[in-house]
Each structure stands twice: as C-alpha cells, then as structure tokens.
Image (tube, rainbow, N blue to C red):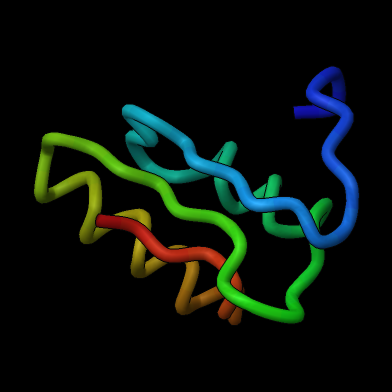
Length: 65
C-alpha cells in the first residue's frame, strides 16, 4: 500500500481481499470521511472475518463484500 501512493479522498477496491488487512490499512491512508474502501472476496468466511476486524478497529470507511 505504501507504494500505491494513496492520498486522502481516494476510493480503493481490494480484489481478493482475504482477511482484509490491506484494505484496512488503505482506509487509514485515504481518510475516514466516507466509505472509501471496499474489499471483495469469493470466500464468505473471509468476508465475515474482515468485517469483524473492521468493526473491532472502528474503521467505518472500509466495508467487505
């Protein structure tokens, strides 16, 4: 993520997000003003786990589907 050059206000799509760690980190880079990061994964258990991490970390700008 550091090499992606993310800045505040950008929108991010994390494909094959897995547990969502990269998306959660991206959320800290782009700001929490609105839902700016979406992580997607084919595995429902990974999506559920990633959403639980986002909730535990109070990352309201990141969601997983």
